[in-house]
Each structure stands twice: as structure tokens, then as C-alpha cells.
Image 1 (cartoon, rainbow, N blue to C red):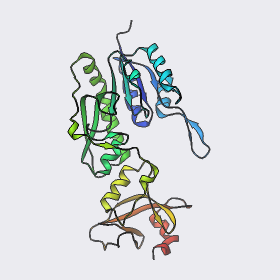
Image 2 (image 1 turned 90 degrees about the vertical axis):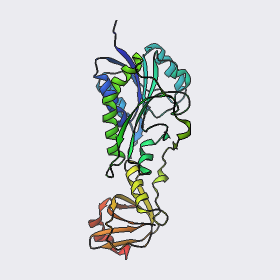
Image 3 (image 1 turned 180 degrees about the vertical axis):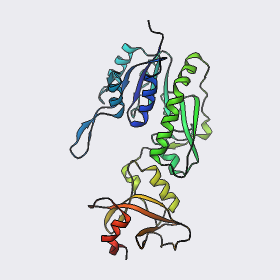
Image 4 (image 1 turned 60 degrees about the horizontal axis):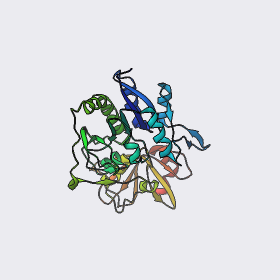
Length: 312
């Protein structure tokens, strides 16, 4: 009989893949199955596409289970009862699980949450840290309870946020650092070396699920710093955009402008040679690439060749 610590892994996006990969290659563990969301239509042709976790699990020879949204708990509970794992490990699964599911593992149901709890409970902790211009964030390894992100925290893994970081780079750093540390953390939880500590309820903050409309910016009411932080947070999705002469204008790449430049009025664009600037409530942004509704994405120099008249 194997003396390995058994795990059922629940996750869906790229962020979760490094955790699954590291655990599957650690001789102390056996990943019995990967639970992930159903395949979803993707692209213009709406081709059913598996989650990154499903792709990785299949490549590693790990069985995959995708409970349907209808009656998902009933099927998941039955599946987990058969597997009887030591740990249930949740990393960005993307769905709420019931108390009956949380009670099934022999040791604990563990969640890897993308903030230093009790800050930023909810669906978008990494984006929220960027939106707020934080200089530090991290991961919390916590015991799952029915209330969202409210369980005892076993340990945290801290990560500096650089001014150049965005949602993509920060996720990569957190995923790499967290997945390297997690196997030892799980063994310490198993042996009782790590005990969960209650969260300080007086310091709880929340973050919400991001919608496409959150990408809409308004330089009349937002500072350059606020817009740049929104760009950093939403670089993967939904991006940032504004209403410009009756059309949507996506700002695909931008940076804070040098302080010695003459600042355009808030909400106004100003082109100087082959460079384009946007005035904000406070400060100025330089637009490096953009896409006007109905047109292809272009860098600013090429865009201005045919569209400079829009900014006169």
C-alpha cells in the first residue's frame, strides 16, 4: 500500500498549472485526479476548448473530472468519496463548492488564495492589489470553510510588486513562488507542524468579480496613476478603453508621461511628432499602441500616419 499523501486538485486557469505540475512530480504525493471546469467555447468559431489544467493533467496522465454545472455537487461528492483523498487542494477553480465537499478529505480542504488575507477576499485579489497601487501582495494557504476566503490561514507567501508589474507578470511570480513552497507546506499541515490561525476580522477587505465594463476609463475624473494601475490590472482582460468620437478606443499599451511635457487638458489627446499623449484629471499618459473600433491594433507611430486628424 502506498504511503504517499493523496491529493485531489481543483483548478482551471494557467495560474493553477504550476501547482499541479510541482505536486505531480513530487515523490511524496499522488495526485488522484484533477477537477476542472467544463470545456468552453472559444474564439470566433466558438470551438470547445479545455481549461489549461485539463490539458496539463491529461499530459501528466492524471484523470480529469469536469462536473457539469447542473447537479455538480452530487457528481463531485460521489467522485471524491471513491477517491478518498488526504487533501482537497483548490487553486483558482472558479466555482463554489459545498460544505459536503469540504468535509470529504481525510485531512483538510486547502485553498491557495492570491492575497495576504484578510485583505482582498473574493474573486479578483491580484487585480485588486494592482488597482490599489500596492507595493506588496502574496498568497495565503488557508483551510477552506463555507464562507468565502474566511478560513484559518496556515501561512502566507509574500511577493513584492514592482512598478513595472502587471497582472501577467505578477501572476507568474506568485505561481512560481507558491508552487515551489506548497509541497513542504502541505507536509507540515499533515504532520501538525503548521496550525491554521484565525483571520483578523477587523482588517477584512473584499474584491469583486471583474466585468468587461470595468475596463472603461474616464480621464476627466481619473488620474494618470489610477488609469495606469487599471491598465496594469486589466492587461489580460478586459483591457482598458474609452469612448472617443462615438467609438470605442482601446489603449493597448501605455506609460506615465515624463513630467517635463506640457500636459493636455483632462480628457484631451495631444500628438507631438509620432507620439500621442492623453491628459488626465492629474498627470499625463503616453499611449504606445491602440485600437480604434473596427480597425486593427497598431503602434502609435503607424496609427498617427492615417489618423492624426482625429486629434487636431
